[in-house]
Length: 258
Length: 58
Image 1 (cartoon, each protein chain N blue to C red):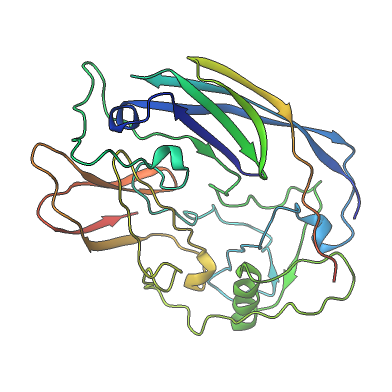
Image 2 (cartoon, rainbow over the protein chains, first blue to last red):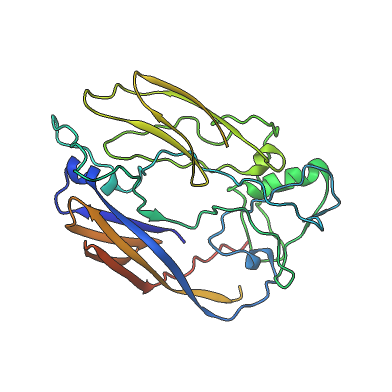
């Protein structure tokens, strides 16, 4: 379930856009009913799950998951700058000619987090002994291809014993180096006052196996920062700040270890 | 599909800080408004969870 939090200031101008924020915290979801052992793949997964992401062992194994599960590697990731472009209340355009306000006295810039969602932020834990487990068997490329196919968001999940139409194209190659285009983002654009943010999910299956380390190389261009203004680009990986780069001139090129 | 556990209520805390603590706070899920209230320094979210999305059966 995705929760969207919108804050609509009474006075909507560039000052309120830059100097006020709403934060949703302590989110909890209460449930009713009784746990029922799943009988199908679809019952095993929550209805909101659009796809299955499975880290595939690098070495060939006969079954998955292996008997001794290694510590989970860094999980797919987000590339973003601190803010979000989505809700209209947080992507405001000032009246023509109006300049951004300076920071309020005593305030410090901070990214606004006004949306929470169910996006996985951590790798799935190995199944507990008492919990129902979904086991996939296979080896080598077959298993990698199956994992990539399951990770494809175009794959459908169904509740019946036979399924048709679950056709998706497996990526041609799993390379240790993936471009933004390979990861599904041909171009990333951010614009507007205040903090803007974008998210890019990365599945380990796109690399053909577990990812133990990662280096991010990001380059791009930007419009000139107005005189007296400040702009910075921050890159997060699973909520960890990888790099923060002050923007000046008209381009940036950063390399950050993950 | 077996019913199993069903989301019943969603709760949380909303804090508004900054220059303008006036306006409207709105929380939505699955296109449903869970909370819409005047912005305040601290708000409590406690609303019924939207129903589960049914999955297409092939």
